[in-house]
Each structure stands twice: as structure tokens, then as C-alpha cells.
Length: 634
Image (cartoon, rainbow, N blue to C red):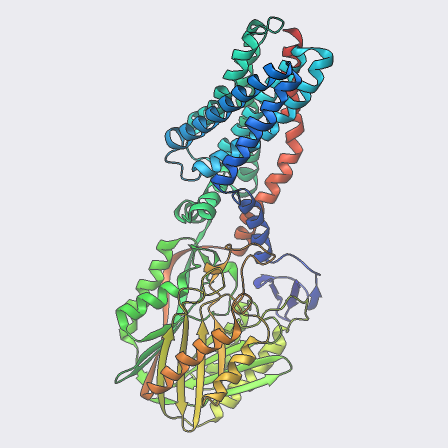
């Protein structure tokens, strides 16, 4: 649901981004695709190019097409015995030359390309043979009526078609350059035309003299048409986003196929802007137990291993290695407007947090957890020293990204109540497939005020803390579980024991949060909350509307809860008197790429497809017409 809230001061929250307009009230703009849906659409297009059959299946298919279909078509042209002999030798020769051409393209021309391994090159040749046979077989049928020259004409037209197809593919996807792409486009078709030439040389009514002019002109015309087609698509990216579409397309390919993040991040760095990024750090120290809650004002996206998608697990791992203990990185109050552009930007934040960790001032006092459920808004707040740790959830309804304005409001209200600051977290712990009425910003603010008032009314007492992390072996990124695993921080104030469970995933299925809280209650916790990091390391790995699995969609709930109980029991067993320290860290000049830009780049493939449909007929129609005219005059 795309909803806009406009406050009396004129600031509007539009898809979690702020703007200033002259009105007030609620505006419902209807449904719109979310960024995840845009990414999901892009994934389907990119992945469809590379969800190809295995090399074994491709080879078997080539045998069937070359030896079977192509070979048997010779029976239509020659007497039965001669046709079978011609067909078998013709088909085997075509098969051998196809495999040879694919081997040379893969291991000589495109060896350093990375994308075109033998499996993909052979699959392209398979598609080309299917296209070529569309010309060859009907030509063989028609030859019995109209003569062999019609068959030859259709054969060479098919030859030109597959050169054009291969040129479009290699010019679009390969990063080997124009010259190597052109050679890769021509090599296999030129090898495969050799058996045809040898056969035509033996047929008096055909003669090679009539064919040679076409074979000289067709490759140049095919390459020129393909290059023009790709250039027009390339221009679309320059016009819309200031970057050429094809290098961006190839960068996406390298990420989807080979997992390389650097080529795509170079584009993000170019298109991004520098921002000062805030990080809230809540540290706990005891004699034998250290723990940390780290909340960067960075969205862990956009997908897979690109940008800040891996930041929660990287920050956890490196902080624990440098400082010790168990760290967790829940989501702050923000959306995709602050995705980092690259891995070096991740490292800036990691290094700054680790360098600042030793400068905290610690307090050994905390207040019990306060929880307020107002309508379908749940707010939890616990005060450590003079800082509130506050979280929002609307579970079991969808809890997605929340506007930065909400976090700023809570921090200001916390200061009004005598606190030094507040760390504000989006639990991001429930998602449904239903279209729902969203909580308004005012409703979230009202619930936050109630919870703050309740929390500050409690007395501050000494507290105990324990923490533990488990890394489930049963679950992978494709299942929705990130490399950060599951961390439980257990806090006891007087007789209240609270569990903070942080799962490295992108949201969780509706109802699972409640199952987890019930399980925690059964092992001695009086209250608690469940969080996900919103890591987008799990995104763009599976097909589907979302392009990822929320926690619990592909994961067995009972097995997951057993892991959570294991971490929580360990945290309970490690409990001891503790103190808490809070730091607000500002990391300057961090390169970020905003939501609008990411959505635009994600949907560029759809725009490119529309542009391709617009220009494909004029370009290749003219090419085909010129080739037909050339054949007519031969």
C-alpha cells in the first residue's frame, strides 16, 4: 500500500522519504510496486537468461537437432540412400563443428569474460540451431516443388539470423569488447556453414558463385544491425540515469552469475552521494560477558552481496573479533534512502564503530522493560543508564520500513523526559501477503509516548546480562538466514528477565514472532521481543514476487525455535552483573545510493525490454529486407 502522511508542519512521509508540501492530512495513493517487487521483476529477467540446461542435456539436444532433425531433412532433398548418407555425415560434421566453435569461443575468445562458460556458450548454440532449423527444414520441404535454390536461400537467411542473434547476446552480455564479441558471434556460424558449402559445391544448379556475395555481406550487416540495436538500448540508460545501460547490465550479470559485487558497486559509487551516517552503539560489560547492540542509520541493502546488504553480519563479525562478546545489528528507523554504495563504505562504518567502542561511559543501572500495545502497534522500551532502547512492531500485520521522522520524534521526546538519548529500532518481524491498513505516523507516535512515560516511571536498579549466538547449520541464505545467525541478549532487572532475540534475516512470516515469544516464556523469560536485521544478503537469490524468503517461509519453525531456545538458554546461563554504555557515532562522507535510484536501476531492464520491442522490427526488418534483396539479385 502506498500511503502518504502529511503533518501540520507541511512535512510529508512518502514511501519513507520526507518532502515538503502545502497541505495536511492523509492521502491514499493506492497500490504501487515496492522496491522488493521491482527487484523481484529484475531478478526474473536476469535469471531467465542463465537458468539453462546442464551441458549434458544441451549436448544431447544438439545431437538430436544436428544428427536427427538436420540429418533427416536431407532425405527430403535426395534419394533415400544418398539422403541417409548425406544426412548422417552432414549432421555429425555440424555437431563436431558446433562443439569446436563453442570450445574456441569459451576458451580462447571469451576466456576472461567469466559469464560464457562452456555450458552457456553451448546453450546459445542450441538456441541458434533451433532458429536455423526453422529456415532449413521448411526450405527442404519446399525444395521438392520449387527447386534447391529456394532451400539454399532459406539456409543462408537462417545463417544470417543466427549471426545476428549471437551478436546481440555477446554485445549485450560479454565484457570482452567489441572485437572479441564480433569474432565470438561469427566463429561458430562460419564453421557450421562449411558442410553446406561443400555440399552446394557438388550441386550443379546451385553453384558457390551465387552464394559467396551473400556470405561476404551478411556477417557485416548482422554485426552492424546488432551493434545499432545494442547502442539504442545503451542510450536509454544514458538518457534516464546518466550511465550506459549495457555496462550496467553486464555488471548485474556478473553479480547474478558469478557473485561479483565490485563491477556493480562501481556504478553505485558513481551514481551515489556522500552523507554523514549515524550509528548508535549500546555496549554491555561484565566480568566474563560482553555484548553490544549496534544500530547504524544505514539500510542493509539493496540485495545479495552488493552495497550494505552484508553490513549486519560483517559488523557483527568484525566487532566481536576486535572487542569480544556477542554483538547484534538490528534495523534502525529508515528505509532504502540510505543504502551504502559499496564494500569500502561498509568498512568505513565498521572501522569507526570499532575505534569508538572503548570510549563509552558505563552505568550499572537499568529499568525494567516497558511494553505498550496500542491497537496493533507494539512498542517496547527499556532504559539503560540515561538512554532508552525502544522498538516498534505492528505484528502480526506487516512491519516494514519506518520513516526517519519517527526516530527523530522519539529521541526528542526522550530528552524531554530527562533522558540523554534514545536508540530506536524497527523490529521488522512480521510480513504477510495481504494488503493491509498501515499504522499511521500519529498512531506510532502516540504508542511511543505511552511507552516512554511508562518506562521512565520505573526505578533504576542494578541489572544482570547474558548473551549468546548460534549459527544454524540447517539454514542458508536462500532459506532466508544470513551469516550473522541468531543472537540472544538476556537482561534481568529485579525479577523481570527479558530476551532480545535478533535473527539475521529479512523480516519473518506473520505469527512466527508470537511462536518465538511463547517458546521463550516456557524457558523462563518473562518478556522480550524478536528482531530481524533486514539483511538483503538473502535477496535476489530465489525467484518469486519478493525475490527472497522471510524468516520462517522456507525454514522449519520448530527447528528454528530450537536454535533460538539454545541461544537463549546459553544467554541465561552466562548471566552476571553488568553495566551499559551508549555512544552516538557519526561516520562522515559515506557514499550512499538512495531508494529512487536503486528502484530505477532495478527497473531499467523492463524499460530496456520496452525499448527493444520498439526498435527490433525496424532494425532487423530492414536487415532482413536487404538480405532478401541481395539474394534476389544473385
